[in-house]
Image (cartoon, rainbow, N blue to C red):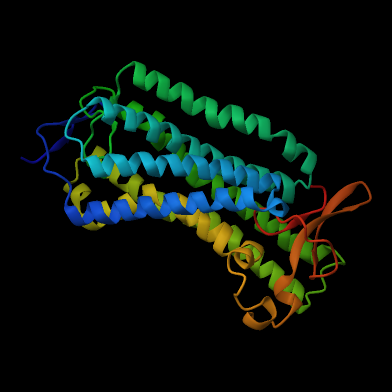
Length: 354
C-alpha cells in the first residue's frame, strides 16, 4: 500500500489517502546513525563544560543549553525511527511532543546565541548581552511550550509517516489545518532562522574586519591574520552548517505542499533524516573538535600548536578579545602569552569582562 498526498487547491492542507510501506531499512540505519552521533556530540559538549571550569563562559553555557535540546531531539527522533510507527499510538504522540518541543526550542536557542554574540562583538556591550540571557530562556522555552501544549491539547500531533518526516511522528496529516500546525511547530521558525542567522553573522564578520582596518592593535602581522582567519571561518560555518542541515526538510515540506512525487526520492529522504538529527553532532565538531583549547584537553597527546600549524608558533594561538579602552570596548587580537587565557568562550575569543 502506498500513500499519496494530495494538496487541495485553496484549502491549505495535505491529505493522506492510504497507508505507506515501512521506511527502507538502509534509510533507517543512516538516520539512526545520525541520531546516535548527535546524541554523543551533544553529550560531549555538556560533559566538557561540566568537567573544565576554565571554559564555563556565558556563550558556552548557552551552547550547553542548545546541546540539551539537540540531545533530547535526537533521542526522541531515534525512538520514532526505530519504532517505525504506523498509527497515532500513545508513544507516537509522546515522541512527537518531545521532539517538537525540543526541536522548536533548538531553533530559538540557535538564534539566541547568534544575538548574544552579535551584541557582544558588534555592540561591544557584554553587560547588555548578559542581561539578555533571562529573556532568551523566557522566549526559547516559553514559545515552544505554548505551541506544543496547544497542538497536543487539540490533538494535532501524531502519525505523519515519512511525507513530512523520515519515520518519526510529527503533525497528523489527517487534520484539516495541518499546514498551519506544521508551520507553528517548526517550519515557520526554521525558515525565519534561514534569514536571521546569516544576517547576524555577516554583521559580525563585517565588524571584525572594520575593527581590523581602524584599530592600531591590528598590525596585520601573521598572528593577527591567523586569528582573524580562524574567527572568520567559524562565523561562516555556523549559519552555513545550520542551513545545509535544515534546508532538505524545508525542500520536502515545499514539495509536499505542491504534491510533487519527488518527496519520496531516497537521496532527499536521507538528507532530510541526517539534517534533522545531526545538529548536535555538527555543533560538537564546530565547538569541541575545532576549538583548539578543548581539542587539546580531549587529546593531550595531539601535536602542539607550534608543530601542527602552518604558521609555526604563537600565530596559531592568537585570539580575539574585548578590551576596555576608555568608555567602550574594542575588539583586539593578542598572541599567546600576552594575556591570561583562563576564559575561552564559544568562538575561542576571550572577553575580558567575563
